[in-house]
Every structure is written in C-alpha cells, then in structure tokens.
Image 1 (cartoon, rainbow, N blue to C red):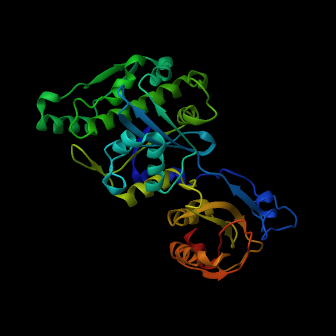
Image 2 (spheres, one colour):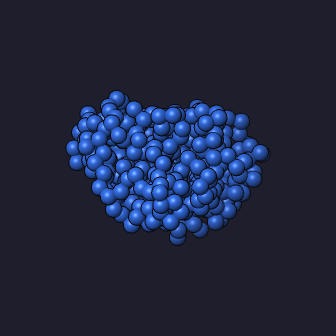
Image 3 (tube, helix red, strand yellow):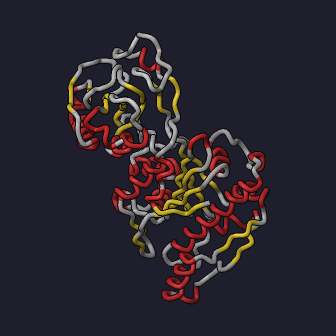
Amino acid sequence: MWVFPLLALSFLIAIPLFVWNATDAILKSTDGDFGDVVLDPSEPGYLTYVTATPSHLTFAVDDDGNLAMVAVIALGPNDEGGSLLLLKPETILEQENTIASIYASEGPDETERSLKAYLNIGFTTSNTMFASNWDSYLAPVSPLSVDLKIPSYEIAVSEVSAVDDSRCCVYEGDIELRSGGVGQFIADSSDDVSGELRRIRQQLFWLTWIEALAIEGDASLIPGEVESGFGRMVSGLSQGDLVIVELPQAQTPEEAHIEKAAVRDAVLDMIPFPLPSSPGARTTVRLLDGVGGLDLAAVYSPSLVKAGAQILIMGNSSEFNRKTELIYHDEKDAGLAERFQQALGGGEVFFEPLTDAAVDITVIVGDELKDRN
C-alpha cells in the first residue's frame, strides 16, 4: 500500500480502457458508419465506446450526524487497486461555504451535487457511512493495529500541542482498533485544532484496513454487495495498490482552503474518464487516431478531459496519414472546439452540420501531433 503526492498518479495514466464496441451508438446517429465492423484495434475504422472510470463518493458522519470525512475513491483497471483522496469537512467550496456546513444545512444529496459541480465530475456511486456502519466492515479483520508513529502525524501532534497542550492527544503510538471503535476513531476531533490529526488518522485507517483485507484475500469478508457501490470500491482497492492522494491545504481552525485547479487536476488524474457533474456539463467527444499506433488514452485524452471533454468513443479514423482535425456539428460548439484545439496544441477546426450526431465534437489526432506520443 502506497502514499504518494499528487504527481505520483502516473500508474493510472497508462491504463487499458474500460470499453465496449461502439457500433450501436454510431449506427443510431446520422454520422454513423454503416460499413463493416472493424474488430482489429490496429486497423483504420476501429471504434470502442469508453465507459466511465469507476468512482465513488463517501460521506462519514459521527454519532451526532456531523460530517467527519469526505472520501473520493477511484478504481484502477479491472477493479484492481485504485486511489483515495480525503477532503476535510472544513474545506471551502463555492461562496465560502464549507462541505460540512452544506451537509448540515442541506443534507447529503445537495452536498454531493455541490461537490460534483465544484470538481466538474460525476460519481458512479455514493453513500453515507454512519458510525455504526463501520462495525460490520471492520469486524472480519478486527482488531486492526494502526501505527500512528509516522512523521506527518507526529508533526501535526507537535503543532496541536504548541497551540493547546491540554487537548493533545487522544490517539498516539500504536492503536489497536476494534470494530466497535472505528466510527469514533474516524470522526473524533476533540484533540484537534485544524482537522489535520483526524485526516491523517483517516488515511492510516484506510491504508491499514485495505492492507488487512488484501492479506486475507477473501471478498466475502466485505459485508453486502461487492459488485457495486461502497462494497465494490473496498473490494477493488484490496485487489491491488492503494494510492493516497495528497494536496496542499491552507488551514485555520474553522476552514480549509485548497486551490480549485489543483484539486480538479488531482481528481481527473484519479478519474481519467469521468462522468459529467450534471447532464450536458461536459462536451461529448469522439477521439480518433489519424496516424496509427498512438496512445490516445495516456497522451491525448487527459488534456481534452481537463478542458471539459467527456470521451465517449475512441479508436482509429477511417484512414491513416491524416492531419489533426476538430469537427463540431452545432454552431454553439465552435468555442469548445477552439478550446480543445488549444488543449491539444494544434489542429484545424471544421464545422460539419449534423442534427443527430453521436458526439458533440470529433477530434482526429494527426501527423503533426504524433511526436507527443
């Protein structure tokens, strides 16, 4: 199990796509190809439909219903391993509201909507974990030995002690965590002045818990459904390496501040093929290799996704040795095509009117951009 900073997510870039054949999507549109279906990924005309990266949002609350943890989870290829980003409930979103204050006043659904809008992505699934919910998840590997003797936690302890030594610290050293105490361990902030002690404890809990499940190697130990939702995420994380994503945070006792662009980039490194935050919030794109042998997923897709694309179809153009082209089908998308042109670093923009196109914009990566591969 690994803890890495933001830029260490490169293992997620070189991923095989979650895809299925796109024939139906293409044939039902006016720009469909009614010729023979191409099954060889190296041949011109091959197309696949890109499914969203499995992602999940978990809220954890304490016994009083106060928000204690916000976890963004993404799975790797074949649901083997993945990444985890923990946001402090005190994190400021839009209009100076914290995640916790939105949760307290509006509930989990509105909080999820606000987070999706802030991050400009959607989540495959989401859930809320109450303190008692953790008991059944931890019971199969209880007691869990959580080692808090790590530099980041000890530094946070010293910072709390410098502010108010009388509060510090409820949890230190090696903690033997039993199923009945995990909810309190995750939620407790009584010894904390900034939320940092709690956040690090949460990280160490996740790392230790997932590692214990990985050692057991038995998905049946996870209660409930493991084919979807929170159970799928936990099972998948235990099948490979878990990457904890770290982001710089400026903290006061009441608020945590994260640079919006930084957290959006971090989440898109975790979730390279996201769902839109709401219908129409992302521009649908067909991304085609006009050269042959290009690594579209690793090299060309990320910049388009960060510019607002939702990659629906990927494959090869009808012929190779093409120039880079960006083709939009509705006049309102002209500015978006130009934005994608800038994100790619080249290409010529064309308008091709269609009333029922499969996607908003088709991007063909051609010879002049192949050196980026």
